[in-house]
Each structure stands twice: as C-alpha cells, then as structure tokens.
Length: 387
Ligand code: NDP
Ligand code: MG
Image 1 (tube, rainbow, N blue to C red):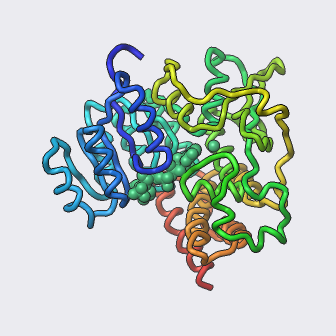
Image 2: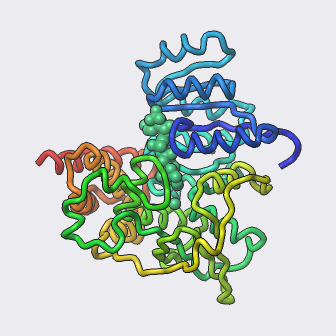
Image 3: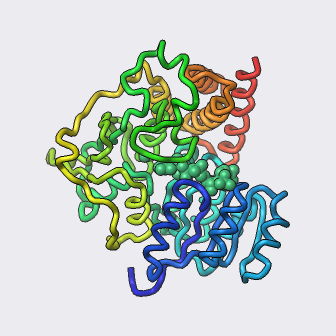
C-alpha cells in the first residue's frame, strides 16, 4: 500500500466481522479511512461507531430508525440514509477504494454487484454472494478489473499460499473445517440438539447464522462453492478435511505435488487485515501461535452421511446453474426457523433437500433469474415449515 490511506466502506459494520474490521482499523489509523458504516437495525452501536470513525455516510437497513439515527448524528458532518437501495447507492461514492462486504446472507448480493459495477475493489466476507451468483459476480469483476480479496479464513489461507504462484497450476485445494460443536455425534443425537448447543462453536466467535451453518457443516459446503468461484477451480479439485484445532486454515497442492499451508491461531482479525491491507502485511500484535500448546494437529474425513448439508451443497455445485442459489435461500430460511425454535436441526436438511428438488432449475441464470429463484425457494421453504 502506498503512503496514502485506503478509503473503505464497511457494509455490516455492527456484526462480528464488521466490529473486528473496525478493531483492525483502530490499530492501523494511518492506513485506512472509513467512508461508510452500515447496520440493519442495531442503531446504538452504529451511532457509537459513526461518532468514533466519522465516516462520510451511514446507512441503516430498518427505515423506521432513520429519524432517530439522523437526530443522534445531527452535530456531525455525516450523511444518513436508510433502506436497502441506499446500500447500492453509497458504495458508488467516488472516494471509496474498497468495500468490505460484512453483511450476512443474500442481502449482500446487490450492494456487492453495485460496488463492482462502480469499479470498487471488494474485501469479501459475505460468502453467500458468491454462492448465489458466483458466475455473474466473478465475470463482472473481471470485466471491471476489480479484485475480490477473500476475508473467509480458509480462502484467505489459499490466497496467501498462492502469493507468488499465480501462474502455477493448482492440482487441489484442501479446505479445513473444525467440524463444529457436534463433530462425532450421531443423527439420533442431532435430532434433539437445541439452538443454545448449536450456537456454541468450539474455536470461533461469529454471528448467529454462520455459527449454525458451522454446526450443520453447511458453512463448509458454501465455502467449497465460494472457493470454486474465487480460484476458478473444478469441483473435483476441492476437498474438505476436518481439522478440529483450526490452526491450519487451508492448504494448496500444486501440480508437482508440493503442498503449502497457512497457519495461525483462529482469529478473524488476521484475514480481515490481510484482505483490506493487501498486498502489504501490516505489523500487528495479534497473539502468536505456540507449538507446545498444540502438540498434535489432527485430521479426519468429514461425515457427510450425518451432516448431509455438506453433501447437498456439493450436489448443488455439481448441478450448477441456479442450484447453489436454491440451497442458499432454503438454508437462510431454515437457519432463521431453527433459531426461532420452529424447525429441528435435522429438519433443516430435509427442507433444503426438498427445495432443491422442487424449485425450478435454470441452467444459465441471469440476475433476474437469481432474484426469482431466491423468492421461489423462500416460498417453498416457508410452505414446508408451515405444513
Ligand atoms: P453478523 O450477523 O454478526 O453481522 C451481520 C451484519 O450485517 C450486521 O451489521 C447486521 O446489522 C448486518 N445485516 C444483517 N442483515 C442485513 C440486511 N438484510 N441488510 C443489511 N444489513 C444486514 O454476521 P457475521 O459478521 O458473522 O458474518 C458476516 C458475513 O461474513 C457472513 O456472510 C458470514 O458468512 C461471513 N463470515 C463471517 C465470519 C465470522 O467470523 N463471523 C467468518 C467468515 C465469514 P445488525 O447488527 O443491525 O443486525
Ligand atoms: Mg470460513
């Protein structure tokens, strides 16, 4: 990075990734300037962040909170907007160099496309955007010469292993997975697990949706699809390995059989900083790994017959077209219903499978097709829950 500051918009600044990104920026004030902060409805934290970081603009998703936000920031030179359309507008502002997409779910798709269309580089945490419309998003990024820097720890690991190797053929990548809180458990056990159990991840402290996805291994399925698009791989080039200690964040195997792995303590601040600071590594005081606290690093095969969400996501990737978009929408409805105690843990999988079979398949979807697929799947999913 040159001596000038990088100007960043953070979509979803009040979430787990968003707040950690602001922690990084607070430590690297001479490197970054925050231009935009957004939240869906957590207004108090957004106000606090806006007062500290003095962005050019803030956006709140919930339009009913607009007046309260505006009056709280009345003494500051900060523009205040509300609603989903405003997200698509603010990312286009001239002074923005990079947009960190740290909002959760399908809601990230349109603002990410708007940012790419405006030529902004993307630091991508919102994996759902690539799962839903990876082909469209990566083609647009290529057309606009926009780089997509991965924030997801596994993809950051792959990206770090590829530095200096851009033209060397990849034979395979191994995405590591912790296995989540239910690793080794049976289907009988999973049938009765509660949201409180599912929300206790052994190694990572994350937002609710991705924590449930990690418990069901859907997260790893979404990440395989994310990796396919980010690194231009064929499905058979991506393997998942369960590595319960979460120290090796992923591995690249090159055409000569040599493997490179990226390691470190599980702390999302590191991949966030690498993505927003690329190509530089910025000095940081993150806790260092101690070999003797981890005398053994272990590896297991994922159990896809117990954790069928992973198998379903891989199946959707193989079918291609809008199938991953279907899986994503069904999963978003399933996770929300599980968190409201309206659906059991294993019922989530049954419902997602039914959506994959019943939603109309489109082999070469346009943006309108993805939007229609998302809506159709959500209808089918909600009907399934009510029935
Ligand atoms: P959180 O739920 O903690 O935060 C989500 C953020 O997005 C919040 O700021 C939230 O606002 C906002 N938001 C939620 N829904 C909408 C919406 N419909 N429109 C606009 N804004 C919205 O999520 P995480 O930070 O855990 O995850 C963010 C993304 O990063 C996800 O795609 C996840 O898969 C990915 N990721 C996360 C990791 C982690 O460690 N957390 C690791 C790797 C990837 P509000 O606070 O008001 O609700
Ligand atoms: Mg990950």
